[in-house]
Structure formats: C-alpha cells, structure tokens
Length: 143
Image (cartoon, rainbow, N blue to C red; front, side, top):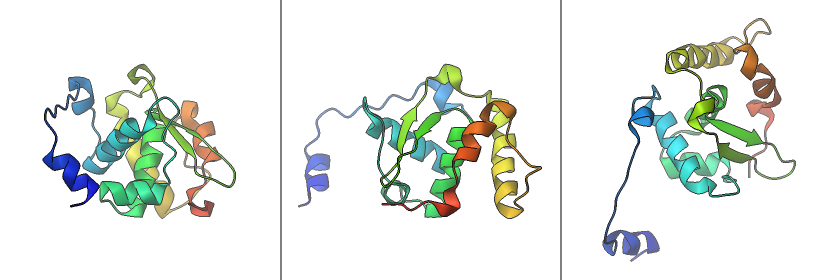
C-alpha cells in the first residue's frame, strides 16, 4: 500500500470548506483545481512546485496549467516571485485584490488571443500589464 492509499484509508474526519464567493468565482475547472493546489501547497512561504509537477499533480495538461497560471496572475489571485535557476514561488493573494468576476472572461479571452496571435497591441488591463510582461512562459526552463 502506498503512502497516499494509507492516508486515504486511515483518515478519520475529512472536511473541506469552500467559501461561497470562491465557489461562485467564474474559474473553469482547471483554473479552480490549480488555484486550490497552490493554496494548499503555499503555507507561509508560497508554493514553489514547478508548473509541470503541478500539472501532473492536478491531472491537467501542461499547456492548460500554464494558461491557468496566466489567468490566476492576471486576475490578481496569485503573485509570482521569479527565481533564477530554480522554480518560481506562487503566492495566493487576498480576495480583496482579485479582479471583479465579470472581468474573468475578458482576461481568459485575452490570454487565448495572445497565444494564438501574438501582438504588442493586445494587452491585459493596465494594472496587470507590468506583471504579465515579466512572465515569458515560452522561454522558461522548468525543474
């Protein structure tokens, strides 16, 4: 029996609480799952797991995980501390810093458009553009 199976078989009280505002926030299932994973792994010092490992752990494709990270960042749900030669640190932000739920679909479409037709004229909302231009997912080396 693996450690995970042992933990599943021997758990006594398993409670999960998802606040209503988070359950109602318009994330798709992959974005929701990845955010929950980052939140669980973050602790006090942030989640420093690589994106490929997060994708594998969450049972989602790497490309899907990268796009979910982009959306979470653009929505203000996470902050990324880039580190040279090692993995980045992903830190959840307080819900008071998140964008309005009605902006999520626009952000998602901008991420999709940006990956299909890269253009300098297409950008994210002004308050997020500096952060997003710092993250170049296509040239990252993941560990």
